[in-house]
Length: 103
Image 1 (cartoon, helix red, strand yellow):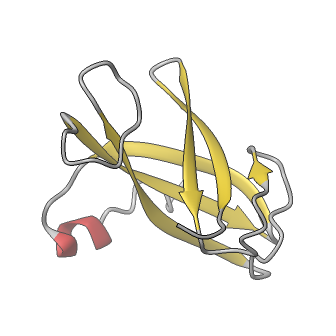
Image 2 (cartoon, helix red, strand yellow; image 1 turned 90 degrees about the vertical axis):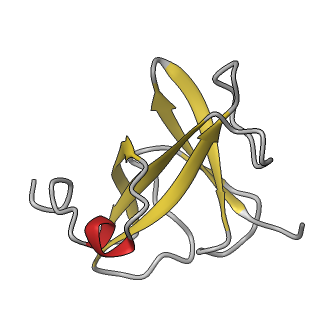
C-alpha cells in the first residue's frame, strides 16, 4: 500500500479518515486548521471519495452501500474545510458542482 497522509473528517456525527497520497506521504494525520506538509501554496480543492458499508463504517471494498464525494479545500497549505456531497456519476456534472467553491 505504501505511505500516505490522513485527513480527519466528520460526517453524520461520526469521524472518518481519508487516506491520500497528494501530499508528503509521511503518515501524518491532519484535521481542519492544520498546515498540510507538501500542499501547494495558494488555494486548492480536490475531490476524494468516502464509501460506507451497511454499518456506516468506511470501506475500500466493493461491499459499500453508500458512496459520497468529499470536496477538500486548502488555502496557503492549511486544510481549511471540506464538504461531503452525494455521489454524482456524471463527471461533467461533478466538475460543474460549484456550491462549495462559491462560498
